[in-house]
Image (cartoon, rainbow, N blue to C red):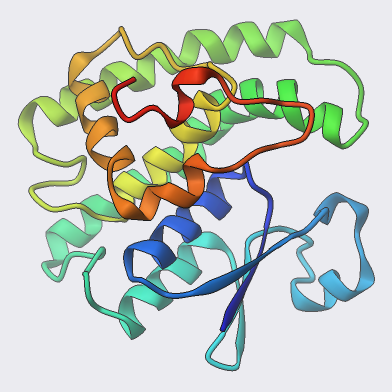
Amino acid sequence: MARLYHVPLSPFCRKVRLTLAEKRIEVELVEERYWERDPDFLRRNPAGKVPVLKIDGLTLAESGAICEYLDETRPEPRLVPEAPAARAEMRRLVGWFDDAFHHEVTTRLLYERVNKKVMKQGYPDSRNVKSGAQRIKFHLDYMHHLLDHRRWLAGDALTLADFAAAAHLSALDYISDVDWHRSEVVKDWYAKIKSRPAFRGILSDQVPGFPPPVHYADLDF
């Protein structure tokens, strides 16, 4: 069985978990306190980051590399488009969420509210929280624009772009930091993903000291 070293609210780990579940790959989840710099974990990934996936006799790191490996070795259902233009758009949007959204929103909301406490790094910086709460509005509006013209974020088919976005938003939804009233289009898109069997594991997450809101696991949120 595959083994994934992860942190439950990490959007990068969630993206890999969604990909594994969508492809019906059984996996053992091992929660890794990567910030403690355990020597055994550093041997698996000298970068000291999660996710790390052990599969097919390999040890893979970095969520983008892991997800594309899974799509190439287990091509059904396909999450990376075959057409070059569609594949480029998917990768652009994965980069958008894992870079811009992560830097402007996730690190300023999730990391300030949760990670600092878990890692014993002090209290949330109110300036960062305020900035993240403001910037998420821009990103939700951009998603609305994309979904106004497309069935899914990168086009007519579900791709890794949707899982990247859903991974970040689901982690933020766990701490009630997504205003789903801002866009019915985005809410409907999230409801479609949230209803997929692949999402069940994500919705069952429980982080000690941080109970999820009632609507978190509600498919009719």
